[in-house]
Length: 186
Image 1 (cartoon, rainbow, N blue to C red):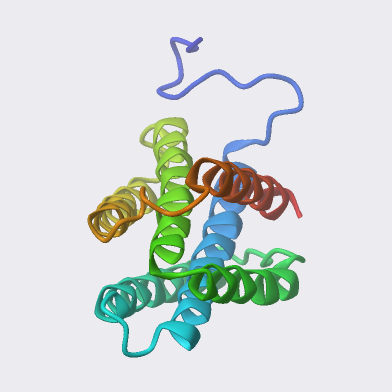
Image 2: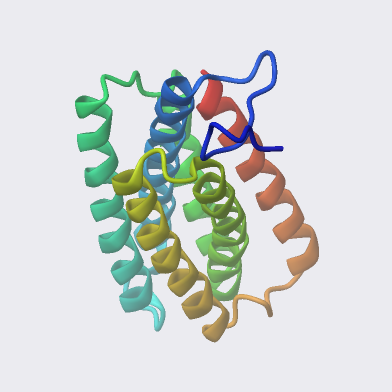
């Protein structure tokens, strides 16, 4: 539902105003990129010398650039990081290390599951933004494209062939969605 005097969607009672929505987006995206860095660091702590190490290292380098961008946005917009950052530090690394210990296919299956959720998340953010924040929207769309590249690279390296993949994927996606919900709000 759109108000004819507005370019974006109508707001319902209890919805965050546009400024708060932008702060939430920056907070949650910063948390997500931080978590992604930690997942890949966890994977690389186990996967050194394996065939997929260069692919994981490339993904980590891109995630570090994404994180650097959101660290800048946090400062520019005076956004408080999520209170869960200490937990994401440990949980991200643990998820990466544990899935890597389970094998290369399981590690890249983790990437597929996380990136599927991030794709949905960034797509929803871009749509919700309309043209309110063109620079932020452009950044999110660029990063979304890179996250899809990560998912596709992980699929090319056997990400859909891991033992127990449907269960693993469902669990990782549920955890990722919960982390998004929590980080956006707190």
